[in-house]
Image 1 (cartoon, rainbow over the protein chains, first blue to last red):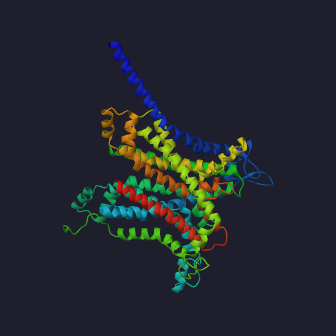
Image 2: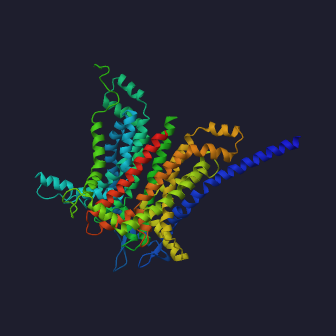
Image 3: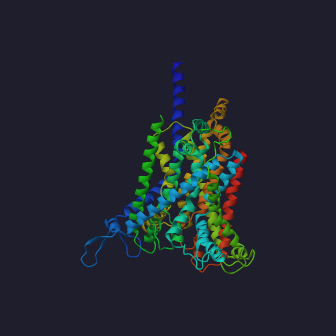
Length: 310
Length: 270
């Protein structure tokens, strides 16, 4: 009967709908945990950044834009006028500069490494991947301490150089800008190599061959064929280094010795000894805005890149 | 211009091998130096006085080390179980159905913790838990750290599980359905066993990022809630003895063994 088949179809449709809804619900626990304990805290610091600092840490519930004003200006104690004080801005620019420098050096070392890995026979390739992955997943704090042991005055480098009479006095490397950039480089190098490797591994070497057939030199093949094809991997690798490097906390804390602040330990300081949570919250949000700009530029870039291919 | 056939290896670029070896040397020299000095028998950090396991003994006998290790394992095991289970559910809900409204938003939320710099997550979580404690009197103790870890472990667990589901051949599931398996039976008997390697590598990533986390734990941890990375950090605040080398070496060796084992498990599955 017609009525019966309609009912069967309706039941099937209803059960399909129900199963679709069930599938949607499967994401709920993850979304809930991240929303409650990941996103809500970000909203809390957004609110905190517009509150007054309590004298011993924490906040008082009074609205003020002091935190953002204090980011750029300092209030004169005597006549209460605002004076431009670029100290924090200077730390931000320095952090961005260090992060960019780290990214460029990582790319210069990482690209040849990833290319070399990708051109090994498959069996060797997986060993190289393992070798790069080990530091990638090893404790960052411990690895940074290891750098400290090497570059300090009584460290391995100075001891060896003095032993060989190259120098009489140890070269001061720890707690300098050099130490911070070296530490960032060492921390984030695998973040560059791995995405570069995965994009170079898929490289179509028939195009490289075609280049050589058309009498291109090795250099021309590298610049005109290999690098353009690896562009998505290069951009991904650069972002993966740049973003954590801008907000780095452990590296400047240990290798900068609290003398050469970067954004990361500047923010942490406001929540610790600085006891100015609103200022720290504002600084964190300004960093967040900078990172979002970088990500937005990436999304736009990769979107136009795709259109170009079509 | 003459081109010598066969003389040009099209895949090599001059100097790249040297850079690759330099890269490995750069990554491993500090780790190796630290490991070697963990076996130093002397009382000073840097003067070598012969090989001994003495400092490992000192470290392993230390009560504080034991409690830090207990805390670390407790936190990472719970965070791994929670984040891997919820991430598995989410991965299934996002690959086995037609796109539903809000799916891309849910996808973005799950990946968000990877895009926020760790120090921001750390201070935001600190502020949030301080607010809960002050406003409502809620304090979950070590549960605070576990919750904070779950947030950043979820995307790490989610990625390999979702990748595995996307690569999976649907014909087997369809065959099961043709043989009158209910969706649950098909999932339980066909999809889940095929998904195990993805879940295992997701859980391994979640475990290791939680185990190694320093920045977020340091901000969120209350008094007495010391984990191994925090313990090492506290040791560096005092006059340092080679004991810290030994503890650092133990931590590195543990992570390395873990990574190498998951590498070989993944390889065998292929």
